[in-house]
Image (tube, rainbow, N blue to C red; front, side, top):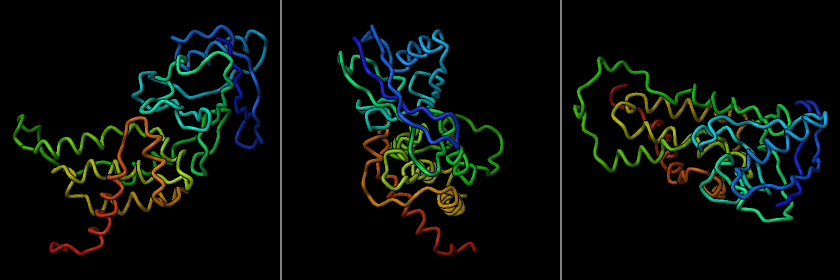
Length: 250
């Protein structure tokens, strides 16, 4: 099939940027979206033009690097799918496709479709880990965790940190991302000792990094390629309120 692509081109952070139009010809429906862009880039390079810059890594829907807004939706129109797992069979011959980078103040554009997502790293560095000394490696099943708790933590741990939630939110909020990281650790024994400090540090970090507030639009949940639920935002809020109450140990 033959497609018309309208791609955001921006030479650098200070460049104004604009949409440029390219033709993608003889595209196989079995190709992934990134493979289609690879072929477009081959033609651009052979004709002496600058190829389209875009992020990619594992191409297996795991790493979350393939950040693109396709026809106005982060990761495209197919639910629970990253760009690298989106196949061209989702489109039809003659389609026009608009491809843009994540749009958020906290994600400045580096070039074309590549944005700087280090703001998410800063949120993680603020507290998205467990640093308590836990001694040697425990025997298997030494610390029993109920299946409902394990399932809850695993659901939160599915977040791959791609930033689609931020790109979809009208406020560019990182609440879904942060809440998944906070909730995952807050329910597990290893994460509880630092739960109070963690939630306060990470919520401060999302404000420091320029992310907006959550106003319950739920666009984050709709755009998430891993189906992270907004129920974790409620958990984040509960954990934050709990952290404001002095503990008996203090």
